[in-house]
Length: 309
Image (tube, rainbow, N blue to C red; front, side, top):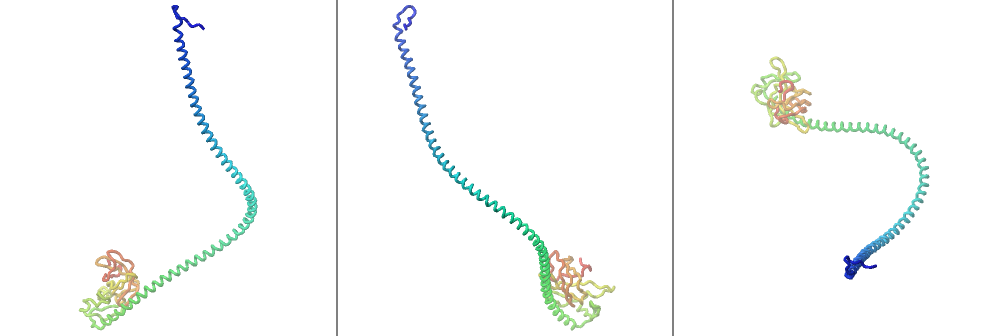
């Protein structure tokens, strides 16, 4: 192929080197391009080889896992076979147990009927036992209450016997003294000799140490012929058994069951009921005790409804 000539008719020789250079540059560029492509291919090949190695490693691991899984699967197959044999044996046992269960059900129904009859009998016996237990508890409670009351009464009797002996001695001394002046009427209606004015005006000897006995004027009749209310004082207190002893007795008009107000100053601090009477003393159960404080020796006692606050 002839080289092109330059316009104007000039020679074509100067163009040859230029074309050769252009061809050389093109060839070099082509070679460089192919070299770069080769390098890229080599790099991709290296990557592919690395991936292949990784895949081979994974393949080996998967192969090992597959082997282990196959072993486990075989073991599971063996267990399934054994379980099937056990299930077959259990089915046979179940059928045998079902037959035994039917027989046991019949026996259970018979036992249930017997149990119902026994429960009825037991309920009847339990009711009788509970009733007997309640009766026993009531009797035991009554026995305990009676025992406590007996102890209480024995203590009261001992105390009252002691006070009665002291009062008898005091009464003997008083009867030995000359009596004249005021006439005293006893609770039974009999008349006794009276004390002299000097004796009746002063305090009598105390029946209880540390206290003063009031003169026996409460059973006298006033000018209108009406009985005066019982008035006296607390001579002794038994706090554990809640009773008191007052310095007035049957000679002063005190009677069993009489209700007495216990007064301190102008305030009623309690109430008591007479449960035992001696000629000059009386024992009373405390019915009520209220403020301003507990009952004290020396507090005044007045027949209830006869002038107490």
